[in-house]
Image 1 (cartoon, helix red, strand yellow):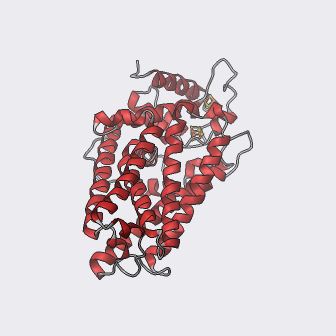
Image 2 (spheres, rainbow, N blue to C red):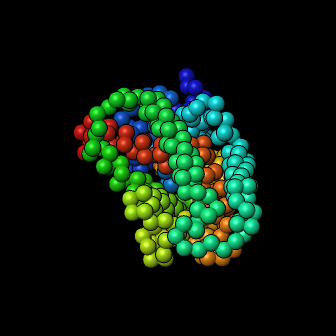
Image 3 (tube, rainbow, N blue to C red):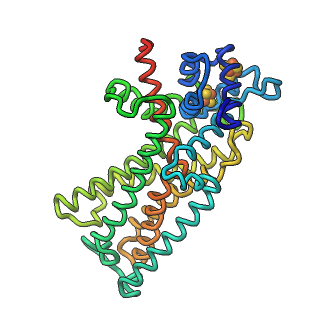
Length: 368
Ligand code: SF4
Ligand code: SF4
């Protein structure tokens, strides 16, 4: 007996697949499945988060619908994954935020943007919001740096703690000891597998999306989004070091490192999410968890809008549009931070943790 209906279904599919084993070369899920004869809830959540939804096993399966066995691994695991996100959420009361996630994120983003516009107007002359501010420290004419650092530092810290607690719950559920000794080779293997999205390649031919012709498009858009996000994060870290170590205040020149990193990352975060949205729009409904399309779309849209407002701010920072654009951008970034633990962002974290576990059990069973 399993905790939910979808885990019952995942167990049924894994039992069928374990007898068949036709897909064992496609991804990490099938070799991990073959290490087991029975599946606990934690095992199934682990396998679901190990799945990259490439669709290859659906396209290749002789038992997929309309066959009476009704084997649909990508869709079943997509639903199980989404339910696991809510199951691991911290604090528990926030698990419900995963339901109607699109609406929740839209509301929080709108309120955050409104709060920043209101705050800029109340703490400054309203005309400061529409004035022209240039040179080092121009952004802080609207909001002092210490207030900005405290606000965003607190939001980021909250997101990190909530995500860490979620990872702890996942790690426990899949049966790993919380205090395990650092396993550097497994960690390094997982970093490499996550960095090149190894299991989003459909076993080498590409990802199946709208039809049975595999392409690398979804993988490329994931790369642009993932590395765009990392570059933007690096830009923020470098800017923070500039401010505190070198006493150099934003905004920086076009050629300066934070701007170069942020611009490259921002371009990735425009093209990647737009491509993922187009792929999602065209995706075969038989492969997707359609009940949670809102969660995926809301996250993709948030990334796109955050990047779009950041690039618009860069282009128009020497004009009177700087104040409203800064309020819009900061509002979106703030909303992104505080909703990260309760939306699609977590799929990257749990998938990475599943890859660590996979690398670890492969090593422990002598497969590498
Ligand atoms: S998905 Fe289908 S073909 Fe692949 S292992 Fe399972 S039952 Fe076999
Ligand atoms: S959808 Fe792709 S990643 Fe997921 S189990 Fe099937 S082959 Fe593996």
